[in-house]
Image (cartoon, rainbow, N blue to C red; front, side, top):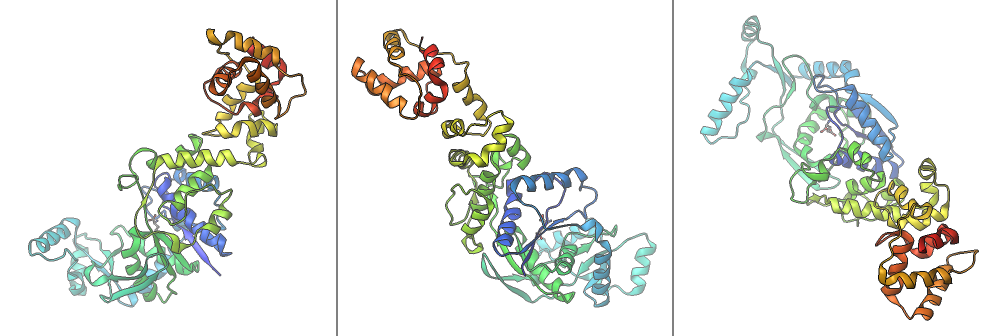
Length: 441
Ligand code: GLU
């Protein structure tokens, strides 16, 4: 049985880059009949807010991600305390008393000597007396995990065989001097407790994985499988800091993007799967396996989001659009079919609908006046259907000798008042004879 988790910190709004692990985990879980846990990493109480926590759920729901289980780290401190005690008892977690300034001096000295700025473990040499003295001075310890120093090997489901050399790393601080937990330990404790089988997250976590595998083992937990995906960057290769890519999911929603367009971009950018419309997350999930995620970069291009959004709308079946159309007072399938091909955003439909219902400010150039008058005379009798346009323009062509743009463009300008727009063949029967005649006059 597969169980994955998505573990955002509620310290800000989700953006496109955060949607990537949210969705990759979801698609993997659903394609494999697995369970999806939403874990809010809210141990940083100063920066975590209820508003951000709510926002994360709203964004996930909008994308179509509905977790099977939700947990919060702030509710689970007792589990972390038990793990802490276990690690202290086995000698893997030790108190250290250096202040940030003292550590900075040590790092500076190491750099001067051309050595890596790795923590020197002097705290391990403190006697009980030394510690008592330091505490009497009012110092509070932070707690470090004693790394094994052996290379940690794992097979990443995306990146293949990996080695993390923990010997070149400082023993990580797991507990701050104020007693609060950093992310590293609670994450492992939760992964063990919730029986997480696959940890799928950004490649910025690869060296954490080395540390965390040691913690899994020190706690006697089962080590899950790991998969580290590439991170979305802007077109310039920089982190998603500029333009549309840095927009929050909330902003993309308000800007009127389709959630599927956002989901496809967040998921398929930087994979070997083409950016194409998929009707739903299930079909997107069938198109992607972890091994198709590229080892190189994942460059996000805002123009591709726009194009994909439009393509999704151009293919969207009426049934999919129906409830949103009804909210705009549109209940006719032919109206949707006539207009969808010109949408960039769904809500553009309200404006395009005026081409049917009016008001339309017809444009008739002086040199076309006679032609348009003739067009009015030749309008076929109703009932009208999709063949009416061809019948009418064929008659006009033989009567006036006009063809191509000279024939069609003045008709478009008179009937819609616009240079471009939906196919007149579909529009004409919806406008009807009476209104068409009025626009031609
Ligand atoms: N809260 C961590 C983050 O957002 C979770 C990382 C993980 O998936 O373990 O980076």
